[in-house]
Image (cartoon, rainbow, N blue to C red; front, side):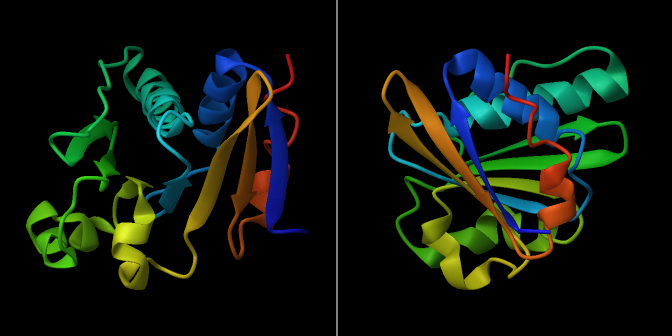
Length: 160
């Protein structure tokens, strides 16, 4: 089974559906790296994923703001701890120790925007999601060693 999935996201609703579909395949300890330019939809995708997990666990979802200024936001969905990090403003990799992100990897679900800021510290098994503009919508490439079977479960999830 291929460890790569290419998806056309024709609109914001398709990006939301991708995040919701991801909620059905993630597990504690997973690291998801969100790559893309400013405005590519990284926070939108993370928000949809977090809120779907919370709806499954609690039947309600919190507001999920972008962690641009706080760098890391933490959430809970039942017993699942979720860390959503935006490392765009990180000025030095030594600041990662203060964020608690490296300790959380392997235990919590970690969603990391701008993962290039911590490249050497990312697990080899991380799922990388690349988002880019594509006409009026976006294109998403999901790639991760060992993720093939899980990615196959969401392949048609964004089609309306």
